Image (cartoon, rainbow, N blue to C red; front, side):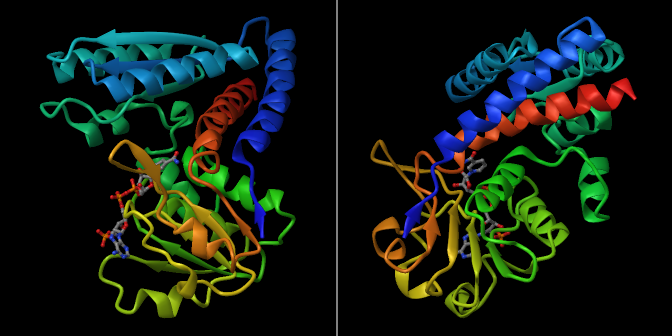
Length: 281
Ligand code: NDP
C-alpha cells in the first residue's frame, strides 16, 4: 500500500501556479486577482478565508477580501457581487459558504458571473461539466483527479465508484471521472448493499461525512481509495474510510488529514489562473 501525499502534491502544483502567476503578471501588467467575500463571523469560515488569502499571496495572485456583517441584506451582497463581476482586476469570485440563514445561497451563487465562478458551483459550470465541456470545475473534485493521476494509475477504462452525490463533491467528481473515461457508479444513502458496489471499484471515492463508513471488507484488493470525509469526533479528525483496515487492501490511499484537504485551495488557485488566462483571450 502507498499513501498519496496530498501536501506534497499540493506544494508541487503551487510551484507550477507560482510560475503561471508570474508569467500572467508579466504579460498582462497586473496580478491575477481573486475576490473572497465573507458574510458574518463564523470561526471556521474565517479560517478558510484566511487560508485562501494566504495561499494567493504564496503564489503571487492578488486577493481582495470583503467582509460583510452577519446581518447584511441580500441586496447588499448582490450589489457587491455585481461590482466584482464588472471589475477587470478581479478574475475569480468566491463567496464563502455557508451564508447566514436569512441569505439565499443558490441565488448568491447564481449571481456570480460563470467565468469568474472559481468555486465551480454555478449551474452554468455544473452544466458545462455535465456536457464534458471545458469549465471551472469544483475545487475538491478537481483535486481528487490530480491525486489519482499522481499515482500513475490510468483512469480510463477503470470502474470508479463514488459514494456520495452532493453538488459540491459527489456529482462533480463523478462527472470528472466520466470525462476521464472511467465507468462510473454513484452510490448514496438509499443505495442498498453499499459493499456490493464498493467491492467492484478500481477507484473508490468516499465523500459521505460518516466516520470510517468504508471498511477493509468493502474494498477490492489493489483499489485506489480517495477519502474526502472530514469528520470531527471528540476533537479528532476522521475520514470516511477506516484507514487501518483499508490501507491493508488498497494499492493507494489518501490519509485524513493530509490527502484531499490540502488540494482544495490549490485547485482554487488553479481555477483563478484558468479564469484569468481565459479572460485574456
Ligand atoms: P453531503 O452531506 O452534502 O453529502 C453526503 C452524501 O453522502 C449524500 O449524497 C448522502 O446521500 C451520502 N450518504 C450519507 N450517508 C450515507 C451512507 N450511509 N451510505 C451511502 N451514502 C451516504 O456532504 P459533502 O459532499 O458536502 O461532504 C462529504 C464529506 O466530505 C464530509 O465529511 C465533508 O466534510 C467532506 N468534505 C471535504 C472537503 C475537503 O476539502 N477535504 C471538501 C468538501 C467536503 P443522500 O444524497 O442520499 O443524502
